[in-house]
Image 1 (tube, helix red, strand yellow):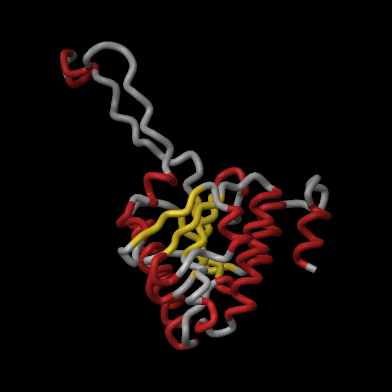
Image 2 (cartoon, one colour):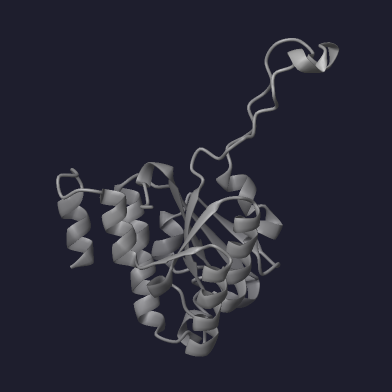
Length: 202
């Protein structure tokens, strides 16, 4: 199973200016998040952001904020609790035709499941064991396919970060790296954006 850029969305969780200095390996984590956002821009993958209690923790890194279609300010640790899933899912298509309830049950069309058009969520952020973890677990519960970019995630301690990865893998998330995402989204060295993406990785 490989990532497909046309089925993916990128969610960047809480890379906030007052939080990042406390994050273990924070500069590398932030650099990988910026790389991810730029690859997503080049390949037309939608990017969404979240900010935890921004009045206290400040806004996200400016480059990441600029890359996002929208940024969700939240107080819950899970962004899904505050409507992120609604941003990630397309609006339900209205039923067409007459009133199905008036038909006998065996003549009614089965209810269509509104599957997200881009149901693969590539997610990264801070802190890995709190907001990233809770958001990702809720998205899994909401039946999104969740891929966690480990080298773009951070916590104040390695132990907390690694415990989050263990729990996420056990819950069904795929664990990947920034380069894995970039090259899977490309799919081939013949992709028109290959050189641009390669320049970001190198």
